[in-house]
Length: 279
Image (tube, rainbow, N blue to C red):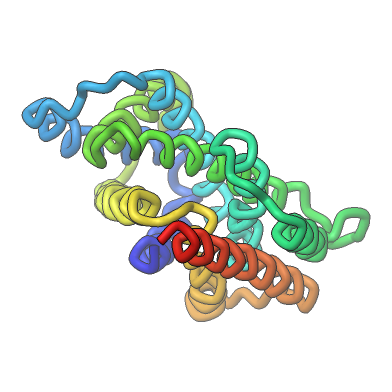
């Protein structure tokens, strides 16, 4: 998960560089072509296309397309630190989804931490104030879709290989982006194509890290580790784009991080206690 965080930082920097040069859906499509050209032949050769859960792969691909659209748009148009803090509401949404779909128990402590985390979201978004920007809801939507896809990934790792999960992710997202990219098409320069290629490589690496992290650990315990992205993105925004978040954004981000770290800590303690009791 730490590798996933570092690679996302590099990806966000590149997206900001080319965000005004190409439509977001075209970036997704071109990235998808490069990823599919790498993943699909390997998956076909290994037989990794076989699955009994095409429905879950379809849902995961659709969620990935929505989340990716929010990701690229946010990093192309919003301050990196604020956008990242709102994207990382995923563990907060994950608590509810894990309870509903994974039958994981949620005690009052984690429920209270979730409420506190959303108070941090309010501090960042500042609804009702002059500083409120409707665009800040876009990374918040990504936080929700990431929670949905994380839930689906956790279920898929029980039956399918990593290559199978990555194969269907690339095929489904490419298929969904094809028609919108056709109508929004802008001829890319050679430099932009190279940078899109870099995004594609980083995407494959981040997906590998992300899926592997959920394969070996409980999702509510592993996900908060990824929060190292918040200070990392803030540093990139400051050094590369001279962005300074306001005090409320900083407070809100700290509250979000603290609440989700507590959720992960609490989950880890409960799991250790359950393991000790069973042994």
